[in-house]
Image (tube, rainbow, N blue to C red; front, side, top):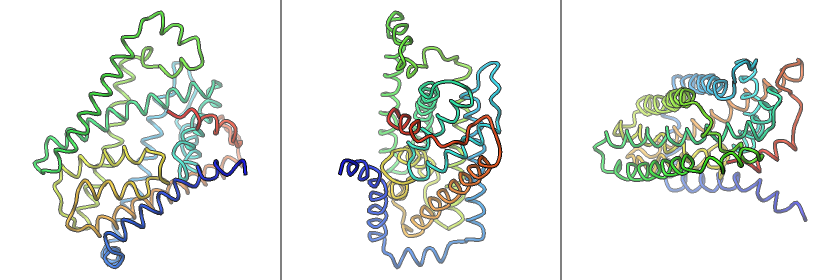
Length: 322
Protein backbone atom coordinates (compact mmCIF):
# COMPACT_ATOMS: atom_id res chain seq x y z
CA UNK A 1 0.00 0.00 0.00
CA UNK A 2 2.87 2.37 0.79
CA UNK A 3 4.28 2.11 -2.71
CA UNK A 4 0.97 2.73 -4.51
CA UNK A 5 1.46 6.54 -4.84
CA UNK A 6 4.91 5.96 -6.37
CA UNK A 7 3.44 3.40 -8.76
CA UNK A 8 0.79 5.85 -9.92
CA UNK A 9 3.46 8.55 -10.35
CA UNK A 10 5.41 6.22 -12.64
CA UNK A 11 2.33 5.23 -14.61
CA UNK A 12 1.01 8.77 -15.12
CA UNK A 13 3.23 9.62 -18.14
CA UNK A 14 2.22 6.36 -19.83
CA UNK A 15 -1.46 6.97 -19.13
CA UNK A 16 -1.17 10.59 -20.31
CA UNK A 17 0.48 9.48 -23.57
CA UNK A 18 -2.14 6.81 -24.20
CA UNK A 19 -5.01 9.21 -23.49
CA UNK A 20 -3.57 11.98 -25.67
CA UNK A 21 -2.83 9.69 -28.60
CA UNK A 22 -6.26 8.08 -28.40
CA UNK A 23 -7.96 11.49 -28.32
CA UNK A 24 -5.94 12.83 -31.27
CA UNK A 25 -6.52 9.72 -33.39
CA UNK A 26 -10.24 9.82 -32.64
CA UNK A 27 -10.37 13.53 -33.48
CA UNK A 28 -8.51 13.08 -36.77
CA UNK A 29 -10.27 9.78 -37.63
CA UNK A 30 -8.67 6.31 -37.37
CA UNK A 31 -9.60 5.56 -40.99
CA UNK A 32 -7.93 8.73 -42.24
CA UNK A 33 -4.82 7.95 -40.19
CA UNK A 34 -4.53 4.43 -41.61
CA UNK A 35 -4.92 5.83 -45.11
CA UNK A 36 -2.23 8.45 -44.41
CA UNK A 37 0.17 5.83 -43.05
CA UNK A 38 -0.25 3.93 -46.29
CA UNK A 39 0.57 7.03 -48.31
CA UNK A 40 3.88 7.78 -46.58
CA UNK A 41 7.06 7.23 -48.59
CA UNK A 42 8.60 4.80 -46.10
CA UNK A 43 11.62 4.03 -48.29
CA UNK A 44 12.79 7.63 -47.91
CA UNK A 45 11.20 8.75 -44.63
CA UNK A 46 12.57 5.96 -42.42
CA UNK A 47 16.26 6.27 -43.50
CA UNK A 48 15.97 10.07 -43.20
CA UNK A 49 14.50 9.80 -39.68
CA UNK A 50 17.07 7.30 -38.39
CA UNK A 51 19.95 9.28 -39.91
CA UNK A 52 18.65 12.47 -38.30
CA UNK A 53 18.30 10.80 -34.90
CA UNK A 54 21.81 9.32 -35.02
CA UNK A 55 23.28 12.68 -36.08
CA UNK A 56 21.43 14.31 -33.18
CA UNK A 57 22.94 11.73 -30.79
CA UNK A 58 26.48 12.52 -32.01
CA UNK A 59 25.89 16.28 -31.88
CA UNK A 60 24.30 16.14 -28.42
CA UNK A 61 27.23 14.10 -27.10
CA UNK A 62 29.75 16.65 -28.38
CA UNK A 63 27.76 19.42 -26.71
CA UNK A 64 27.90 17.50 -23.43
CA UNK A 65 31.68 17.16 -23.81
CA UNK A 66 31.98 20.96 -24.09
CA UNK A 67 29.60 21.36 -21.15
CA UNK A 68 31.39 19.04 -18.73
CA UNK A 69 35.07 19.10 -19.71
CA UNK A 70 37.35 21.35 -17.67
CA UNK A 71 40.96 22.41 -18.27
CA UNK A 72 43.18 19.42 -17.63
CA UNK A 73 40.21 17.06 -17.52
CA UNK A 74 40.72 13.74 -19.30
CA UNK A 75 37.05 13.29 -20.18
CA UNK A 76 36.92 12.00 -23.75
CA UNK A 77 34.29 12.16 -26.48
CA UNK A 78 33.85 8.38 -26.41
CA UNK A 79 33.20 8.57 -22.65
CA UNK A 80 30.40 11.07 -23.23
CA UNK A 81 29.03 9.02 -26.15
CA UNK A 82 28.84 6.03 -23.82
CA UNK A 83 27.24 8.01 -20.99
CA UNK A 84 24.70 9.65 -23.31
CA UNK A 85 23.91 6.30 -24.90
CA UNK A 86 23.45 4.50 -21.59
CA UNK A 87 21.21 7.28 -20.32
CA UNK A 88 18.98 6.82 -23.39
CA UNK A 89 17.86 3.47 -21.99
CA UNK A 90 16.14 5.31 -19.13
CA UNK A 91 15.14 8.49 -20.96
CA UNK A 92 12.96 6.41 -23.29
CA UNK A 93 10.70 5.86 -20.28
CA UNK A 94 11.26 9.10 -18.35
CA UNK A 95 13.23 12.20 -19.39
CA UNK A 96 14.11 13.16 -15.80
CA UNK A 97 15.36 9.69 -14.93
CA UNK A 98 17.53 9.69 -18.05
CA UNK A 99 19.04 13.06 -17.11
CA UNK A 100 19.70 11.80 -13.61
CA UNK A 101 21.46 8.71 -14.94
CA UNK A 102 23.56 10.87 -17.29
CA UNK A 103 24.59 13.16 -14.42
CA UNK A 104 25.57 10.14 -12.30
CA UNK A 105 27.66 8.60 -15.10
CA UNK A 106 29.52 11.85 -15.82
CA UNK A 107 30.06 12.41 -12.09
CA UNK A 108 31.66 8.98 -11.81
CA UNK A 109 33.86 9.68 -14.83
CA UNK A 110 35.08 12.97 -13.34
CA UNK A 111 35.18 11.86 -9.69
CA UNK A 112 32.83 14.59 -8.49
CA UNK A 113 29.41 14.85 -6.92
CA UNK A 114 26.16 14.24 -8.78
CA UNK A 115 24.92 17.69 -7.72
CA UNK A 116 27.83 19.31 -9.54
CA UNK A 117 27.05 17.57 -12.81
CA UNK A 118 23.34 18.19 -12.33
CA UNK A 119 24.12 21.89 -12.00
CA UNK A 120 25.75 21.75 -15.44
CA UNK A 121 22.67 19.94 -16.80
CA UNK A 122 20.52 22.69 -15.32
CA UNK A 123 22.69 25.31 -17.02
CA UNK A 124 22.24 23.53 -20.36
CA UNK A 125 18.45 23.50 -19.89
CA UNK A 126 18.66 27.23 -19.17
CA UNK A 127 20.57 27.78 -22.43
CA UNK A 128 18.11 25.56 -24.28
CA UNK A 129 15.24 27.77 -23.17
CA UNK A 130 16.98 30.86 -24.55
CA UNK A 131 17.79 29.14 -27.85
CA UNK A 132 14.37 27.56 -28.40
CA UNK A 133 12.41 30.68 -27.54
CA UNK A 134 14.68 32.81 -29.73
CA UNK A 135 14.41 30.46 -32.71
CA UNK A 136 10.64 30.27 -32.42
CA UNK A 137 10.35 34.04 -32.05
CA UNK A 138 12.54 34.65 -35.10
CA UNK A 139 10.55 32.21 -37.23
CA UNK A 140 7.20 33.63 -36.15
CA UNK A 141 8.30 37.19 -36.91
CA UNK A 142 9.37 36.15 -40.41
CA UNK A 143 6.05 34.41 -41.06
CA UNK A 144 3.03 36.19 -42.49
CA UNK A 145 0.65 33.47 -41.31
CA UNK A 146 -1.95 34.73 -38.76
CA UNK A 147 -1.19 31.85 -36.36
CA UNK A 148 2.43 33.02 -36.04
CA UNK A 149 1.30 35.94 -33.88
CA UNK A 150 0.40 33.64 -30.98
CA UNK A 151 3.81 31.96 -31.13
CA UNK A 152 5.52 35.37 -31.16
CA UNK A 153 3.60 36.55 -28.08
CA UNK A 154 4.31 33.32 -26.17
CA UNK A 155 8.03 33.26 -27.00
CA UNK A 156 8.50 36.98 -26.47
CA UNK A 157 6.94 36.71 -23.01
CA UNK A 158 9.10 33.68 -22.22
CA UNK A 159 12.28 35.50 -23.23
CA UNK A 160 11.38 38.50 -21.10
CA UNK A 161 10.91 36.17 -18.14
CA UNK A 162 14.29 34.51 -18.73
CA UNK A 163 16.06 37.86 -19.03
CA UNK A 164 14.43 38.94 -15.75
CA UNK A 165 15.70 35.79 -14.00
CA UNK A 166 19.19 36.34 -15.41
CA UNK A 167 19.30 39.97 -14.28
CA UNK A 168 18.07 38.96 -10.83
CA UNK A 169 20.81 36.32 -10.52
CA UNK A 170 23.50 38.82 -11.50
CA UNK A 171 22.12 41.48 -9.17
CA UNK A 172 22.49 39.33 -6.05
CA UNK A 173 25.02 40.78 -3.57
CA UNK A 174 28.44 39.17 -3.86
CA UNK A 175 28.46 38.33 -0.16
CA UNK A 176 25.22 36.34 -0.55
CA UNK A 177 26.58 34.56 -3.62
CA UNK A 178 29.74 33.58 -1.74
CA UNK A 179 27.67 32.13 1.11
CA UNK A 180 25.55 30.18 -1.37
CA UNK A 181 28.66 28.73 -2.97
CA UNK A 182 29.65 27.21 0.37
CA UNK A 183 26.51 25.06 0.35
CA UNK A 184 25.65 22.00 -1.74
CA UNK A 185 22.78 23.90 -3.31
CA UNK A 186 25.10 26.72 -4.31
CA UNK A 187 26.20 24.55 -7.21
CA UNK A 188 22.83 25.22 -8.78
CA UNK A 189 23.88 28.84 -9.50
CA UNK A 190 26.83 28.34 -11.87
CA UNK A 191 26.04 31.25 -14.17
CA UNK A 192 27.92 33.75 -11.98
CA UNK A 193 31.16 31.79 -12.44
CA UNK A 194 30.85 30.83 -16.11
CA UNK A 195 32.97 32.33 -18.85
CA UNK A 196 31.06 34.05 -21.64
CA UNK A 197 33.15 32.13 -24.19
CA UNK A 198 31.80 28.79 -23.00
CA UNK A 199 28.29 30.20 -22.83
CA UNK A 200 28.59 31.37 -26.44
CA UNK A 201 29.97 28.01 -27.59
CA UNK A 202 27.04 26.18 -26.01
CA UNK A 203 24.53 28.61 -27.52
CA UNK A 204 25.97 27.95 -31.00
CA UNK A 205 26.04 24.19 -30.45
CA UNK A 206 22.47 24.06 -29.20
CA UNK A 207 21.31 26.29 -32.05
CA UNK A 208 22.80 23.76 -34.46
CA UNK A 209 21.30 20.86 -32.52
CA UNK A 210 17.77 22.24 -32.62
CA UNK A 211 18.39 23.40 -36.18
CA UNK A 212 18.62 19.71 -37.08
CA UNK A 213 15.07 19.28 -35.76
CA UNK A 214 13.85 22.19 -37.85
CA UNK A 215 15.49 20.91 -41.04
CA UNK A 216 14.16 17.39 -40.44
CA UNK A 217 10.57 18.56 -39.95
CA UNK A 218 10.72 20.89 -42.97
CA UNK A 219 12.11 18.15 -45.22
CA UNK A 220 9.76 15.52 -43.75
CA UNK A 221 6.64 17.61 -44.33
CA UNK A 222 7.79 18.34 -47.89
CA UNK A 223 8.41 14.63 -48.54
CA UNK A 224 4.92 13.60 -47.46
CA UNK A 225 3.30 16.41 -49.44
CA UNK A 226 2.03 18.60 -46.60
CA UNK A 227 1.81 22.25 -47.64
CA UNK A 228 2.17 24.71 -44.76
CA UNK A 229 3.82 28.09 -44.32
CA UNK A 230 7.55 27.31 -44.01
CA UNK A 231 8.33 29.99 -41.40
CA UNK A 232 5.29 28.94 -39.36
CA UNK A 233 6.50 25.33 -39.40
CA UNK A 234 10.04 26.35 -38.42
CA UNK A 235 8.72 28.49 -35.55
CA UNK A 236 6.52 25.61 -34.35
CA UNK A 237 9.38 23.08 -34.09
CA UNK A 238 11.18 24.82 -31.16
CA UNK A 239 7.87 25.06 -29.28
CA UNK A 240 7.37 21.33 -29.86
CA UNK A 241 10.87 20.73 -28.43
CA UNK A 242 9.95 22.78 -25.36
CA UNK A 243 6.82 20.71 -24.78
CA UNK A 244 8.75 17.46 -25.38
CA UNK A 245 10.94 18.28 -22.37
CA UNK A 246 7.98 18.30 -19.99
CA UNK A 247 7.93 15.07 -17.92
CA UNK A 248 4.21 14.47 -18.48
CA UNK A 249 4.33 11.86 -21.25
CA UNK A 250 6.60 9.03 -22.44
CA UNK A 251 9.24 10.46 -24.82
CA UNK A 252 6.88 13.22 -25.90
CA UNK A 253 4.34 10.73 -27.25
CA UNK A 254 1.08 12.61 -27.54
CA UNK A 255 2.36 16.07 -26.62
CA UNK A 256 4.50 16.33 -29.77
CA UNK A 257 1.61 15.37 -32.03
CA UNK A 258 -0.92 17.61 -30.26
CA UNK A 259 1.40 20.64 -30.24
CA UNK A 260 2.30 20.42 -33.92
CA UNK A 261 -1.31 19.93 -34.98
CA UNK A 262 -2.49 22.87 -32.85
CA UNK A 263 0.23 25.24 -34.06
CA UNK A 264 0.08 24.36 -37.74
CA UNK A 265 -3.64 23.52 -38.03
CA UNK A 266 -2.94 21.89 -41.41
CA UNK A 267 -5.55 20.82 -43.94
CA UNK A 268 -3.87 17.39 -44.14
CA UNK A 269 -4.15 16.60 -40.44
CA UNK A 270 -3.98 12.83 -40.89
CA UNK A 271 -0.69 13.06 -42.83
CA UNK A 272 0.87 15.33 -40.19
CA UNK A 273 -0.26 12.97 -37.43
CA UNK A 274 1.18 9.98 -39.31
CA UNK A 275 4.48 11.84 -39.71
CA UNK A 276 4.60 12.80 -36.01
CA UNK A 277 3.82 9.28 -34.82
CA UNK A 278 6.57 7.93 -37.09
CA UNK A 279 9.00 10.52 -35.71
CA UNK A 280 8.16 9.64 -32.10
CA UNK A 281 8.25 5.87 -32.65
CA UNK A 282 11.61 6.06 -34.43
CA UNK A 283 12.97 8.25 -31.61
CA UNK A 284 12.00 5.67 -28.99
CA UNK A 285 13.37 2.77 -31.07
CA UNK A 286 16.65 4.52 -31.90
CA UNK A 287 17.34 5.66 -28.35
CA UNK A 288 16.33 2.29 -26.97
CA UNK A 289 18.72 0.49 -29.35
CA UNK A 290 21.59 2.90 -28.64
CA UNK A 291 21.03 2.46 -24.92
CA UNK A 292 20.83 -1.33 -25.20
CA UNK A 293 24.05 -1.50 -27.25
CA UNK A 294 25.98 0.62 -24.76
CA UNK A 295 24.63 -1.32 -21.78
CA UNK A 296 25.66 -4.57 -23.48
CA UNK A 297 29.13 -3.20 -24.26
CA UNK A 298 29.50 -1.93 -20.70
CA UNK A 299 28.93 -5.45 -19.41
CA UNK A 300 31.87 -6.76 -21.45
CA UNK A 301 34.52 -4.13 -20.96
CA UNK A 302 35.90 -1.74 -18.38
CA UNK A 303 35.56 1.99 -18.93
CA UNK A 304 36.00 5.21 -17.06
CA UNK A 305 32.23 5.67 -17.05
CA UNK A 306 31.06 2.95 -14.68
CA UNK A 307 28.45 0.59 -16.16
CA UNK A 308 27.20 -0.50 -12.76
CA UNK A 309 23.56 0.20 -12.03
CA UNK A 310 22.95 3.17 -9.76
CA UNK A 311 19.32 3.18 -8.71
CA UNK A 312 19.90 5.25 -5.58
CA UNK A 313 21.92 7.91 -7.39
CA UNK A 314 19.38 8.08 -10.20
CA UNK A 315 16.55 8.54 -7.74
CA UNK A 316 18.49 11.30 -5.99
CA UNK A 317 19.19 13.02 -9.29
CA UNK A 318 15.58 12.70 -10.41
CA UNK A 319 14.36 14.28 -7.17
CA UNK A 320 16.69 17.25 -7.71
CA UNK A 321 15.90 17.62 -11.40
CA UNK A 322 15.56 21.32 -12.35
